[in-house]
Length: 291
Length: 341
Image 1 (cartoon, rainbow over the protein chains, first blue to last red):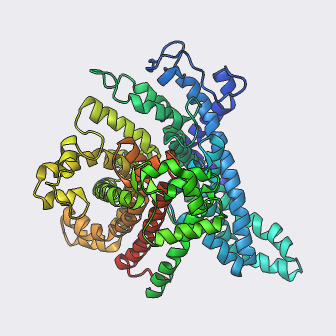
Image 2: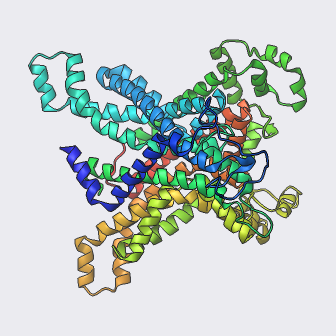
Image 3: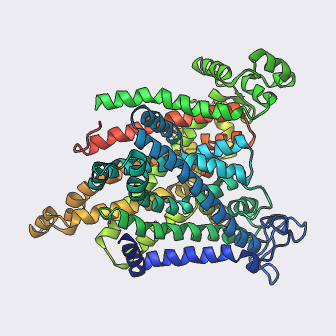
């Protein structure tokens, strides 16, 4: 079965195994965040602890392993809890975007005709603007915070799943076993739920889950632009935004504040890299023509 | 083919209407006072917003208001943008050429280095050169452009002082707004040459280097991959073996025979990427403080400048749809086997 093939491919290919290791590592960090970096503000764990009110970042030390960024926000805490936030954003957005895509794509394929036409034109509208630009504009209109950012990301992500699900359902619809079920006297809803969906949905679920890296990257971009997580939140994009003011270092020491970029930047790079490497393995299996 | 183009062009207004209505609908969440700025042409009017609200019926229902906005747009009036301190149409005219210029220089980088690295990678398959090129391409695909941008600023501005952020130096800024500098196209690279001013040309070009390198990373990674696999495919074909058997040297075999065929997917990819870059410019222009349309959009969004946001989105949607259509047409031009239906 396809599951064995995926596992085999991942174990035999060094780069995809590397991707798997990275993703599992981040997953563990996210799960054990409270142990790795004890919460200091029980009301909001994603609130970065502030060490003092001094402005300039401080280099890594025994107390602050990754150093502190502007206004003494602890970078280690930010990277650890930022991992948890990244998974939270990635999973939530992908789940809801896929759910909407499944409903819209399923309805378009099942009803066909006018419904199909209207729903697909709706996806065209969302596709007419680059997703980052559209997400940016929606997030700005809703007001910058994490919840609204997730709504904006969901709003730009669902159409690609709708198209994917629709295409898969339409192709599965033509298969012999569907005709067989129909000749046996099965009704429309039963055919859709028991025969078409389980077979059509699998590739889309895989594609959707591999988009988590991309969703997190877009979320970080929005936070970087100041249209997502607000200052003081344990969010990678937000931490990099704070590093912006310090990239030039001090006179004579241009790299004085390197850790403000490298700590959160390294985290997001590795996270996205892990998902991309894993994604390559899956894409090869799902589409054997593109080796 | 003609049918396809006509159908897509007919879809354009529909899609643009959809996008702007969606955004217009969202603006209704904001107070009428904030939305009044959409109709204010003179900053001095900002004091009497209640009048503006009454005059333009900003408490009417969405559809009525949207109809009015459309009517204004049809007359070329996109409203006044407080964040850019000028009418939106003027802001677009001023900032768009800089962005197209940036995207163009970027795509030149992408194609040049992508083809170079991709070819080298394919010819030296599984040697160290190939492994390095593949590592760069996997890494480049995952490196967020805002992280790369900051690192490049650290090195090339902070440490080496070679390239500065911004669109041009202060001297150039003074010159081009002085009346001594004639504007022909709005593209500073072209205008500086037409003015015969090489100093401005170099100044503008040097300010383009860092943003273009940053922007190119994702597309470059993709280009290396495509070029590599395309070249490998061609190198394994019979005609290449024949050419080798004829005794042609390596250069002729690789570049004159295989290269010509291998480059087809690269050209189509480049045309698609050119359009995609317009999205990436939003971040790059913000990091490098580059005076393009992306930075205008970001500032408008940050300051909730509705007229700016709507005008920006409208323009991006039109560009994006037209650009995608153009790249579809280019597909058929480069590869006659593809038919548009």
